[in-house]
Length: 205
Image 1 (tube, rainbow, N blue to C red):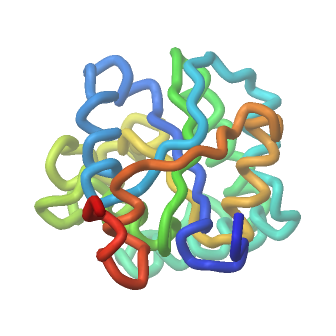
Image 2: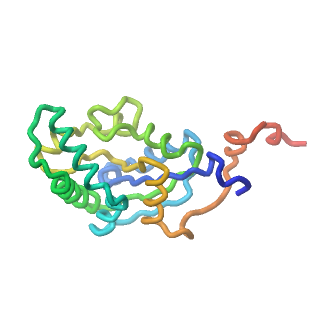
Image 3: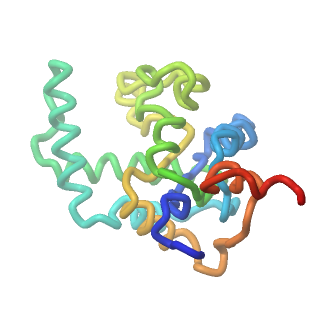
């Protein structure tokens, strides 16, 4: 890497969840990220354990507290009474649902690289709730689930994809799911178009 701090080296972590695999959307989801110019640098098909999933969501020690408070506020914003005012208890219940969901079948774990990878992937993926995700996003185009449905059925919301929320989060999640030797450093021809200061070098002599 000539300049490892360049935006083009930013990486993010993505999981195609069991519902995405079961609905044969692996190729469609990968295509969405590829066609914007991101580079796939690691990929594996696997069935994670509950321990792997729990560790994934608690890589940030404050996750339970932050997530629980957001959930409580979400109930209040919808005019509902939270099942508990204890953010940790609420997060533990959410984690139980997530672990059951993510371990229900094969997932595809991936690392994507490219300029502003974290924000670009989040934009393409769409909001957490499919019902309110924009048309044109993965979740907006391919899922009809909602918070009311998932709460009624006591399950995690089915939204096809997990995508890291920040560069720091991506770094931690990549290290959790992949060994360094599983991430491939290579060049794509299209990077010359995407990142070169001028495009003169694409022409022959």
